Length: 358
Image (cartoon, rainbow, N blue to C red; front, top):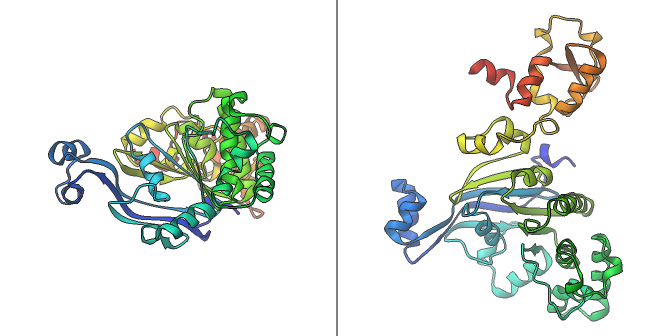
């Protein structure tokens, strides 16, 4: 299933106008934000309250990797902790599989965390006195699952993250990347539907980080899991996410696919973020093509590409065929034309329509 193009996929997490304001006067602070338009800084000065998340709404669908990206202090880590009620919202609802988690009693909340939601933090917090297998099985041990059963589940999870031969080693014997794999295996051992990841790779070397990003995305898709992934790095969000939410000062500024955000930034803040992002493998033909009727040449003589061909593939088609355009074909028919001008605009993150409007 193509999550990017499917609005029909089941919604597993539904945040509805969620607020988190820290401080004794949080109610007054929220009222002042909504009625007087006070900023995060003004709320701190007037009410001695810290705005963590401000009126956030989003949905995470089954099988989707949803990235929440923002700089330090943007509210992204606060938001992910609201998703499994590590902290309670000041206002609004968080529904997990249709259930308002704020309304769950302690036993039901523990059950939901155990069965439906796994979490991996930046600091993986492995138990140093326990070996890799025991660390991976720890969540099931807490649930009271028998040793043999939990070890079988942990061994299977460790095999999925490439640590089948390291079960008897201890955390001190592992590299940082391997420790993060153990943390992921620990989350997978209970077979949750949803995995929450709070900047799990940010402390790793760039090469190991990219490797784990690719492995995590592939593993999540192979297992059919849904994931919410927190990051301060837009490149990482683009590499991993099906959709991305960009946050600033507790507010979700924009939600969309990487291509949508790069091609149509919601404001100057987002535009500045995406300014240095390469469009070669990000922007697709369907975003660049113009109507066939506007092309003066022989359409039948043009090389053809699919609507999801990226800019790099389109450039290859044009240079390989020595033509001035590419015909975009779908279901046996020509649905659009991408010219050299369209390509150059795409490299800049623009479309022909946007260029004419400007």
